[in-house]
Length: 358
View 1 (tube, rainbow, N blue to C red):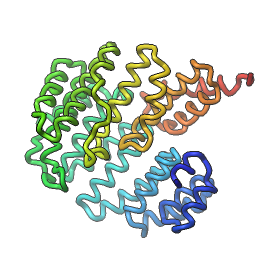
View 2 (cartoon, rainbow, N blue to C red):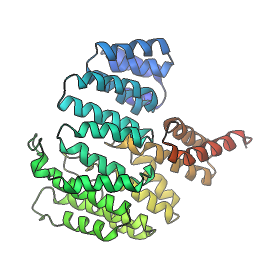
View 3 (tube, rainbow, N blue to C red):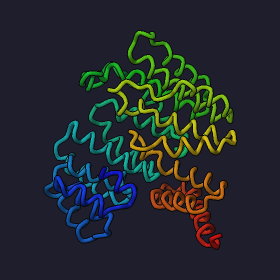
């Protein structure tokens, strides 16, 4: 309920709801940012550096970056959490660096995020290595080819059977990492313009027997690789066909784990529908497909940019203004090579806001 109130920009209602149980550190930080209380934000940031536990700090990062859509303001909290977590190396340090990387990717800042993922990778945990590959392959980050090739070579040479975290919880890393590795290699091959290598990775993902509980999710990953190849090759109808079976039928224990939450598949479906001229259906996917999902922050900026474009074409001026404004705020500090899309959105926003209301 509090999240809903915040998303509707009803901060007073959100505060009244949380007052029933009491504000924690993350709530206080979020409300300070929402109210523009810079003195309180500074005080809480100092506490993040000196005394507050990393868990609470990263809850604040989540609430500020995700709920308020203010990842740039959340970033100093994330960096403070990393410093605290690095004082106790191990799993906590790995997770802290990945939190920071996710915050930076939300802002369109691949270069800084990559450094955080490399630091996380040093722990020996296989997931940061694979997350780095999957993220680098996202088309809207436009990662330079030499970097993509180096990341692919690193993943190709890595053996998940030797992963240092091969036994965790009900669904072990040793079960998941081989499939995620193939998925990362497939996406990287697609981004590098190597369709045969991408198709081989997808085919390998499809070889699990139907009796294997991971068979369905692995096939969805394969479909996503094939759809990415099709969108890249300007064959949008083929992409829609490839994704026909990707409908969120994910085992409960995987539904909150990237990449099984299928965010990229939904994004690709929207892209393909746009390319086919089906604005209405694409709009429904972009409006409803990224609410509270595992990787929503990664895609939010680009989803908003596409929604702004759709709304503008449909003549829904205020919706277009809101979408472009949110995109500009989130991606204001994006990497230099990504700035053309930011400047274009700013120009569209300026034009729409200067037009007389009808």
